Image (tube, rainbow, N blue to C red; front, top):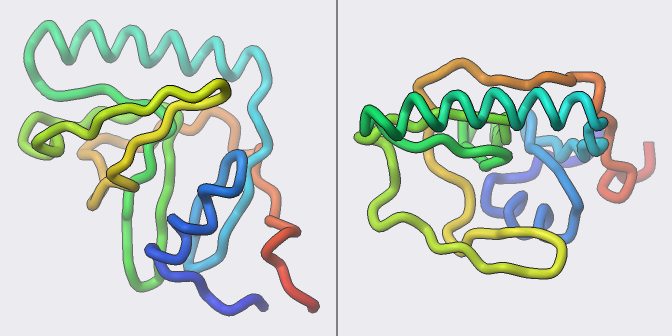
Length: 135
């Protein structure tokens, strides 16, 4: 078993990985989802965005890190999440464009969104061999 990673340590490590989450103090690298998964996630995101923003209820985000627990350390990034207005960070984090991805300077959000997690493909998990030490 690899030594548990804290939320702060995870944020530093995750910047060097394509996609990862922290589950019970262990870094888990995610396999990129397939086309159909992406299409369904985009459709759900679009429908939620239309509903939530038209009513001024909050924000809809995708692949955003949420700190669910600090002990054991858990940061999850659902495909789509609704964050109600009272929980939207103020001021909102700004985005930095790069050739390959978008990132915020604020790091993961504290607390979970007040909706159920939408993860369309739990099979995309695999242990992070870069961080798994000798057995």
